[in-house]
Length: 406
Ligand SMILES: [Zn+2]
View 1 (cartoon, rainbow, N blue to C red):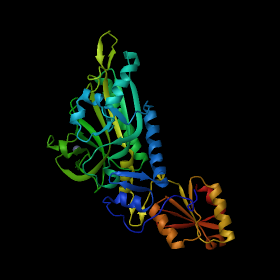
View 2 (view 1 turned 90 degrees about the vertical axis):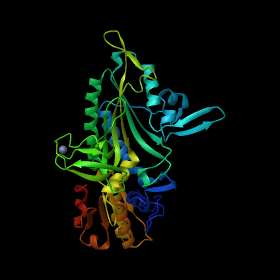
View 3 (view 1 turned 30 degrees about the vertical axis):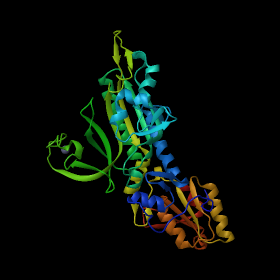
View 4 (view 1 turned 30 degrees about the horizontal axis):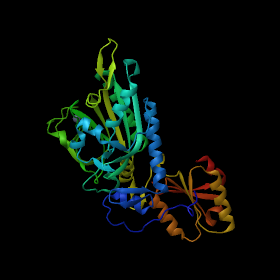
C-alpha cells in the first residue's frame, strides 16, 4: 500500500471525548474514527488489524472443530420471550419494525442458535457439534466509555457447542480453554484466566482478563500461583482455590473473552432434545465461548505502546514493514520502488510533501514492527537503514541482503 493513497489522517493531539489510551492512540494514528459515542468506523489500517485478529481466531476455532455460520443481527422478540430474556437482559437493544413486529439487535445468539440446532440435531449421532460466527453485536449501554472497550456495537466471535452430556461438555470446555490461551498468545496479549460467576447451570465461568488501567473489572490475582478471581465472586474465596495462599494482588482488567457452561438453560425453552443411545429423549447440553475482537484490539494497544505511539506485535500489525523513502530524487525513488515491489505486506511512505521528521514521527505513531529507510545517505553504502519499532538500535543492511531478513 502506498501511503500517498492511504485513506487516513494522523492527529498530533489527543481527540476530544476519548478517555482510554488505546482509543486515543488508535484515533491519532488513523486506525479508527468515532461516528458517535460507542460506535466506531474502522479505517483501512484499523480494519487490517481487525482482519488479522479475526483470522487468528478463525484458524483456532476451526482447529477445535468449529463450523462457521452467520446468524442474523435482527432477532425476533418471541425467541427472547421464550427464555425470559426480553425482560431480564438489561442492555437488550429493542427495536420496532412497522406497527406490530419487534426485534432485538443480538447481543449474543443462544436465542437463535438453539432453535436452529433443533432443526438439525435429532439423535446422539448428530452430536457433538460446534458452531461459530464472527459478527457485529449490540448492547444498549446507558453509558459508553473507554473507547473501544465499552461500545454499543462491537465485533465478536461466539461459538456454541452442543453435547450429549455434561461430561462431554467438560472435555470440550477444557479444549476451548487451551484454544483461548493459544489465541491470546498469538495476539501477544497476556491474559489471566479468571474465575467469574456462572449462571443457573454451573457456579463459575471463566473470563479472560487483560490487565489495563482502562479496564472496568477488578480482579484478584493469587500472588503464589497467579490464579485470578473476579471481584464479583471473590467473597466466595478466602483463600486461593488453586494453592490455598491468601495473598492477592488487586488489578484492573478488561474482559477480552469468556467461556461458559450453559447446560440445558437454552435447550429446554426451545425443546432442543436428542434421542440417546438407550432410545430416551434428553435435552442437548450446551456451552458458549466468546471473544470481543474490537476489544481485543484495544487491549493489544493498551499493552503495546510507548510515548511515541503504538508498537504492534507482528502477528496483528496492519503491515509487516514500513518502508520510508526520504528524499525525492531519482536514485532514492528507484531503490525504494524496487523494495516496494519485492517486499510482502508493506506500507510504503512515498509521499514527497512531508519532512523526514514528520515521516518518522508518524511511523512511530502507527507502530509497524519493522521500519526500512532508504535515503541518499544509506544508498552511498548500497544499504538501507532497518529499525525495529520496539528497539532503539538502527542497523545498516546491504540492499542486496534486505530480502534475507524478511
Ligand atoms: Zn494460588
